[in-house]
Image (cartoon, rainbow, N blue to C red; front, side, top):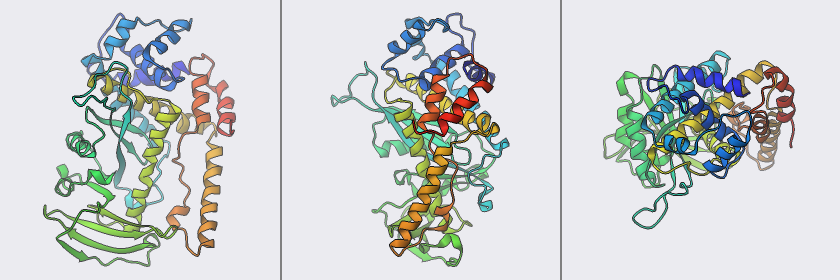
Length: 416
């Protein structure tokens, strides 16, 4: 397992322009050390992790000073960031080649990448200073999840508080400077990320087209609203109450969709700059953005990554990138390597099917109907703790990969 991870990291390191020779701790070993800290068992601190390495006879001992000083190294930060971006693209491409596309059932979306963005926070580091009000600040940043494949990336880390206003500023700064994309993109974001003028402009961003789908804030008041004719007989539009074009004081013109969930009767109002897609499908794209919250739950509760490794933005950047790399390595192993051997999350597949059946029966008893799109099983679900434990338990073993397959198969089908 250790060698498998090392090969993936070595591949990504080949794309880094900031990599340098280092006698104390090579860049490859640096990446491997941090990735194993994320994937491995929960450690109470960096010192705890270093001691676990020292106690492992087969592991390379790392000087405490070198380890902690490297978390403040600008060069190491740049190297890690470049490797994260490379690994993101490598894993994403590998998943695509393997036929992984959670939206392939919707050909009308073929021209779009679909990404969910949201903020994710951790507890401050042990020696972090308090702010001017005498409080500790949570640390973190914004992650993006490519919804077709499930891979994640760190968009930006900041020293902002959990204020969504400041989070929007950070998002706009990072997102607008993203490297050139070749495809149009649909962005699924929290309502706090709404800025009419900004998203109206992004529709034509470098001629690529970047579109938003979000919930409408209650305090937003359009100055003009014009009804739009919609094919209410289309199966996707079951539950859609109205569609209109709205204009705000900023002159931004977007589409407003009022949708009533036929399962619960709860009403939602969405804003989008996307056109040419059935409004019912747009509503469900936003409902599916909760998948990124499932990833955050994995990072927090199953990886146990609830605390910053060190104080300062450089350390925060390094940790955020390493966490994304570690998650994507596990995702690739699950979706490609294990899938080739016919090993799947049987437990979760069965649970999902039972849940859809339960919801349908309950809805019908209440005189309602389940939306047809809600009846489609989605393979993109949360990683099971059984799979993660199995990966952790074999992390440092030199056992040939094929001999570990039965262990994963048993773990992913159990309720241990």
